[in-house]
Each structure stands twice: as structure tokens, then as C-alpha cells.
Amino acid sequence: MTTIELLAALFGALSVWLSTRQNVLSWPTAIVNVSLYVVVFREARLYADMGLQVVYAALSLYGWWQWTFGGPNRGTLPVTRTTATLWWRLAAAVVVGWLLLIAILSRTNASLPQLDAALTSASLAAQWMLTRKKLENWIVWIAVDLVYVPMFLYKQLYPTAVLYGVFLVLAVMGYLAWRRDLVARERRNHRAA
Image (cartoon, rainbow, N blue to C red; front, side, top):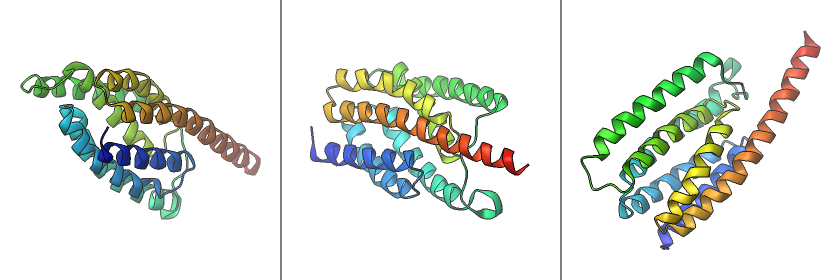
């Protein structure tokens, strides 16, 4: 365990907790989190996850803007459901991303390249869904976190494994909170119609 890994884990937990509450401050704290994890994953030779942090930083800027101005009349973005068409597009993107990352990682000394590539690709889809406030982003995060925890234990990244266990709990909480918000908004809209 390093100080950088511990700080990264703390900022990560704070960021996801703020996301479950739909608090826009989740995005700047996410930028600090991913910046620190670039260093952690480089040292662990988890290169896909290292690169993923750079993409997360860009997605965090995009999410910050979307949550603030991406809603109706350039207002706050509401929680919505993922359509079947979007699910198919995301699944295709995950498979293509996974295959591309395997091709790249197979030319390096990466540790666990196929698993790292699969988790990275699925995480990108979940993160994009989070930037657009798609309710089901939390379901994807739950699935990913269930695999990340044992992988980080195997790599002896113990604070990160604990963090992803916390992420798993927060993803369940986020799903329940966002679902309550969505259902309440749908009921209000139904009554107004």
C-alpha cells in the first residue's frame, strides 16, 4: 500500500458516494481520483486500467458539463432508462473495445491482459452511462466490481480491492436512490399529463 494508492482510494470513494447523491462535485473529485490511479496502475503493470484513468478524466469533464447543462433547457440532467437500442450499441462497443485492447496489451508485459481488457471496456461503457445519468450504469458497475475485487486482491492492491468493495456497495445504493428518483419523477409526470 502506498500513500498515493490510499489517497486515490479515498477520492474514489468520495466521488462515487457523491454520484449516488447526484451531486455534481462527484466529477472534480473523480478527476483527482483517476489522476492518482494512473500512477498506481502503471506500477502494477495494469496498463489498460492505467489508460482507462486518462479516459475517465476526459469523461469526468464531459459528465460534469452534462450533469450541469445537459438537461432540458440546458438545465440539470435527469435520470433516464437505457433503451434496448442503446444496450445493443453499448454491448457492441464493449466487445470491440475488448478485442482492440487485447491486441494492444498482448504486445506488452501486461498482467492479466484479457481480464484487464474486458473490465476496462465494460467500465468505459458504465462510465459513459453515468455521464448521461442512465439508471442502469449502476448495474454494469455492480457486475464489473464483482470481478475487480478479486483481481485487485490477486494483484495485492489491497486498498484498491477494499475501495472496489466499497464501490460495489455504493453502486447498489446508487441504483436504489436513482431508481427512486426516476420513479417519483415518472409519477409526477404521469399525474401532470
